[in-house]
Amino acid sequence: MIRKEDIISSLQEDNHIYFNISNLKEYANKVVSLAKAKVLRGDKDELLSYVIYYDNMPEIFISMVWTKPENRGKGLAKAILLDLIESSSKDLLLEVHKNNPALFLYEKLKFKIIGSSGEMIKMCYRKSISIMQPYLFPYIGYFHLIEASELFIFYDDVNYIKKGWINRNRILMNGKEYTFTVPLRKASQNKLINELVPIIDDRWKSKFQKQLEQAYSKAPYYKDVVDLLLSVFDKGHTNITDLCISSIQMVYSYLGKELNYNRSSQVAPETRSLKKAKRLLEITKRLGYKKYNNAIGGEHLYDKVYFQKNDVELSFVKSKIQAYNQFNREFIKDLSIIDILMFNDIATVKKYLNDFELV
Figure 1 (tube, one colour):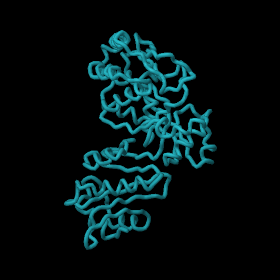
Figure 2: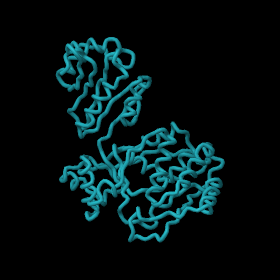
Figure 3: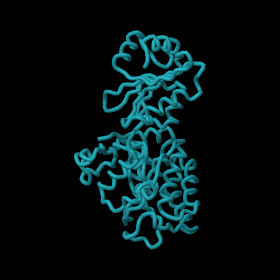
């Protein structure tokens, strides 16, 4: 429980620095009557830290995070926020001033930037899961699926699909799309994805390096990323799943971001007998989630009403990314993330990762 006098006295010093509350008394009255709070107190009822939030909408909105100045940096607010995250099945929203040191705490807790207004940054902790076959250096929509979820599951123990995007993708070559392919040993649609072994020898790597050079050597960020891209193929992956995951991890490492993932073969192998939506639902619920995100276009495969009847909210991730400059030629969309990395700086790529909506 938090009292009006607690709120007023604790916020006076920081008011008009990283937040601007015109009337602290009015704010305190609103909080006590409408909001909830998680509070940490010390000896003699001393107020140490608290989180104020509103839980009357589809999402939880965190209105205030405060820690007594002399106790900052000790993880008190972090502990309260973790408790709130773990105790709720809803997404958590907040706004933070761009210069507020708390921004780094929220990023460590995996709150993701979803927008901004003036000097305020909007962030969200998404309490949802996505499940998708592993793709090699996938297009931006795949990354939107990752960013839309708290946990991403690589669907690696399902059958391989020929002419899919598991071991191939498209780059820009001479103004046109060009498909590169990693060969697989004895590829078959009767095999699981994680059973297939990529054939990456020096000859193939040399060929791919020349393709990248021909395609992007004049791109503004070619020198920044080409060695990182090629390094993915130097790690001796024993199956195509590992190679695909490594290609995605490389992107996240380059951007200074974390990838929170697991594999269906590890978290729910016993569900393999279930088909399509039933298995997705079972994995989602077994892992403790009530929200499942699917790539846009899956509307003809998965029905929101069916998911709802099984106590899971289904959303589709719709990309909103705008065209960017590709050598001043007609824009070709949905190429491999390689194309975006070649033409855009890190800050812009991070922005593109947030250009989606849930429908």
